[in-house]
Image (cartoon, rainbow, N blue to C red):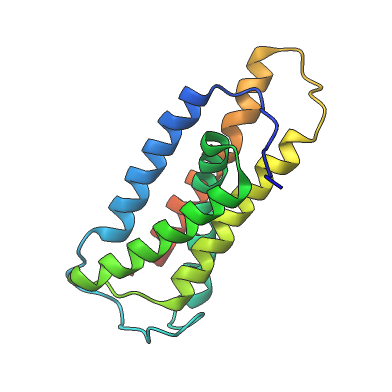
Length: 162
């Protein structure tokens, strides 16, 4: 049985463009070399280091919008989850080769949770009745979660800097 999602009123090309932007942002944040890493963490650590909880929550927030967009583009929850897991593992493995970066199990877990929350949001949104007859309100409703997530991530990054 396939888990095909009903279409939500957002064009697929809009979702693709937002997904490209989110992907580029994640790659920039996760694969840029760091000259002075705060501290090396154990690979199998989940909530470690002085900013462990904040880092975990930021990773969850960072992967929720791409999870949402991947599900909108692919339109199957199971395939979207496979893409989220594959991308997460690929990013963490690539960090082995980047100075100042190190993969952790906590990042993998947080990224998968975030992507899963995004996929779940598509499911929830698809099953809610559309009560807004105005296009402007619909556009605002579509972009508000991404703007909020971006604001939270930027705030978190600024707070994590020494």
